[in-house]
Length: 302
Image (cartoon, rainbow, N blue to C red; front, side, top):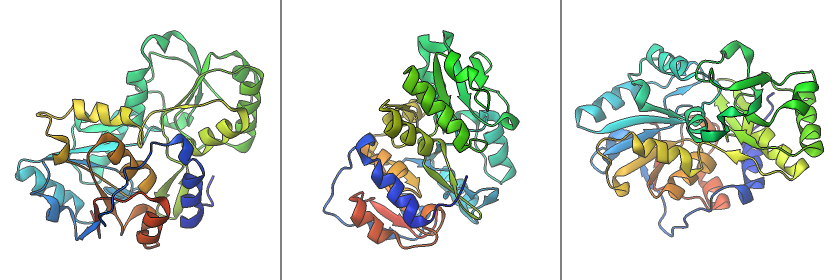
């Protein structure tokens, strides 16, 4: 499902601000810099979003692989922190390698992994799964899962719901889910809080869109895993070795409401990419003022 523009995507995030962390207000305007090289001396660890920072869809952003290599040559830790929950972990690492990026499995932290790490004693439940069959169930083998499709029976039978990937999701399936939750409230765990994601031809509609919609309809508060929520940052921090002071950690992303807001809530630095991803078709300055979410830096490019 598509159809979002920059303005409608921004409005969709603003409409759900009551479910997102509060921003850290600053009177200091963002500092404009060219790219990551300009910040190399100021930080010891760089947490990079994927869409809009490494790549747009299946296309790598020019020059980023070289800048990452340069940061590492200077002793910096570089990690991907992404809400890409729809794909198995190994598939993402393979994708980044195919696009020219060198990350180990431990250096890629996703909202999918964050959700799985938080399941704990709930692993014994039977879950209804919002996901695309073609991506497979790697990473999820230990869970009792039933795909949510057109048959209404599983919606009524499962113990809870996992919202991981929305590429195959439809309005009809959403209505079945909402009706099932109204009839019998159960936990809803969201493995990707994104409402939209930038692609080559515009914005895709992500699981966060449907999670907020069902919350509005049913009154059930979903549990979100991924940016801007702290759980994904806690997982990322645990993989840094050594762990720098938070003032020396920078989150780099293209979205005010996930990357920048999440960084502020986690107490680390933030840099907004203006030339790619969410704001590729517009100037972010007006959006920054309207949202009241001010990054520490604005990058022309990653």
